[in-house]
Length: 244
Image 1: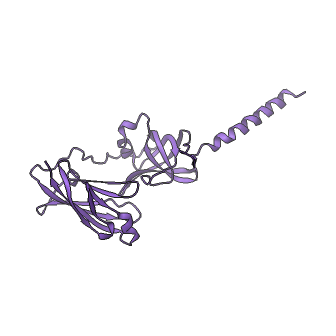
Image 2: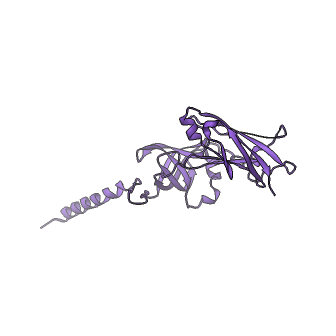
Image 3: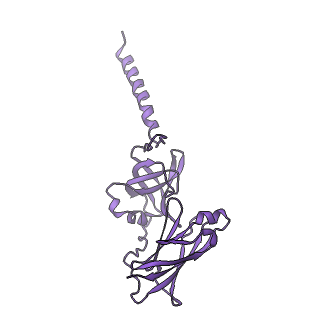
């Protein structure tokens, strides 16, 4: 006849064995037959770093590795802080923080690291002074007297953080802020699109030939092909004309 102590020991072992597979599910998994499986929501701690490159993104440099990674990319989750994203991350850049959310594996080129966290909550864990939000130019509008202008983009495609340098001119006069006249996006396939302000359309695209400048509604460039050809310092541009 088993003793009570023996039954407790057996029960404890069964509990431990049952818990081991659950712990192995803490990291996201690939599924060759369909969508991968993200981890459970978990808390991470580390330093928040803002990468001001061609693609803007936030890195959490971890205090200890998670799922074999020393850093994770932070993206907007569905939690309470989502409406303020990315302003909350902006003011905490450079600070030590604690974040909460599921971990998952990226499946497109829009991500910059091999692991990301969809953040639902984030809070500072140090007294470091918060920084002001990054300037927002969404309300900037072009001068109504401007009918056409030229956009030049200096693109450094070397590894690291290299924001695109813009110069916008009309009739030899430089226009400010450039964000009122031009915008760009980098797709998951690393195609670079150049855009005009509302009320304007791209007329011509030009620049480093290896980047294959062309016009398909907006200005389109292929910096990946240019880099493969050994061209990583790119001078690209396009012209914009007013439309009815």
